[in-house]
Length: 266
Image 1 (tube, rainbow, N blue to C red):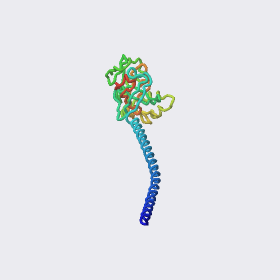
Image 2 (image 1 turned 45 degrees about the vertical axis):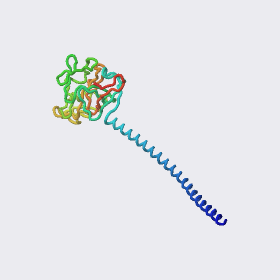
Image 3 (image 1 turned 90 degrees about the vertical axis):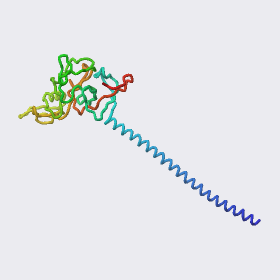
Image 4 (image 1 turned 90 degrees about the horizontal axis):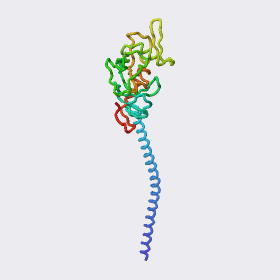
């Protein structure tokens, strides 16, 4: 009996030791719950950070694409009919773009202080004129224009034709600067004055400020002559003046709305 009691005692002691160990284990479980909760918070914070990072990257990429590669625009007005109609939406290519004759381009007009869409008719250094039927002539050849709504009835009166489109480094024409001054009349941004020793120009975007010397003063940037396809319902180079290179934002290359007219712009 004594041996049995001893065994029972030993068993109780072992049970107590096991219970103590289990109690210790339960304490560990309590600490593990705190650790798990802390880990969950860390995981949630990590996921939130990843979401925010992904959104930030997407925004940056969108800004890069919009600034340097492509952008979307909506046509406002009738000046490019029948090629483009009011409300149509276009994709504009901006990266590594150099305008070519007949390209449809988006222009940030300094005269109108808004974006406009026109077609490039003549490049820097080209000579523009019109025949008796008011067909466009570039460098002595009549321009084939299947895209226009109808022939123009007016050349606008801003320039005398033939007109040589300004090209950087080539000899400047004072008549072109006078036309620039006329466009900016009332803003005092372009001034031409007669001094004791010659003519002086201030505020021109085409030539450097200072004395204008016929045959020596040169253009400081390239320009383009642009027109709307709806010739008799368009404000363009005939009335808005030549378009400096810096104002051309890109080429309208693709129409994506309306869906029944989706396709490449020609």
